[in-house]
Length: 332
Image (cartoon, rainbow, N blue to C red; front, side, top):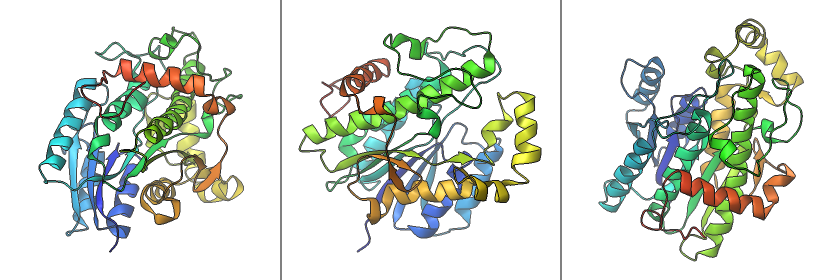
């Protein structure tokens, strides 16, 4: 019998989220899809597209849930709801959680959420952490997969869109409270690159802690660089007009040619399919590492530093209000 269970996709109406959802419903129809979006109403054009995609598969087991990742209360409420449904038998146990949602801002000073954290960091990391750690005891008895979406930008080297180099700061408060910088684009992009580095470090920390606990040893975490999405919608918002212009009138029309010349540049459809395959395919079962697309790869060396992993692990749990009372995994 083909494996089944619940797959949670965080950020399901994003550029790669919609084709990922379709790939799941078409290729792995035995799974129950729990799809989160920021706005679940039809006022959101992307949610309408996601709902239309689901409608093409009338036998699909899929639901859309509104979760505002810029509010930790929303992330915790979602986790509580899903946990209650699984424990009541209304949903099958979890087999995979794909943490795909993110945002960036390359045009203004850092934005802060009502929780007091820099928005890119909270939406792209902290809310994912809260959901994953709250739901570990809802995974299937034989385990499953947590997939953090990383990026080539996580490497500590010069980036095309920024003169700065990303890092995990010694003063971790700089992650949640970055200082303003006159170079809005450079500083904004490095916040994005930094959160992708943090996602990757945290995946390795999660693996170490999962393997310490016999109850959770069969849950595996991976960090995946899916490639640069040439037709990503993120370029349409909070992005300088010159970058928007290049992406719309040069990159998108020439994407078939560019993707052949640079294998890191891909379509949202390709990326979405890979996300699902890495999460549920038997081919990758048991892997605990960093992937570039569907190939095992080496992350930036700092990712393997267990002292850095542990500092980030503890601070992430603290920032997103994870405690011994709401997480079944021992945090220290």
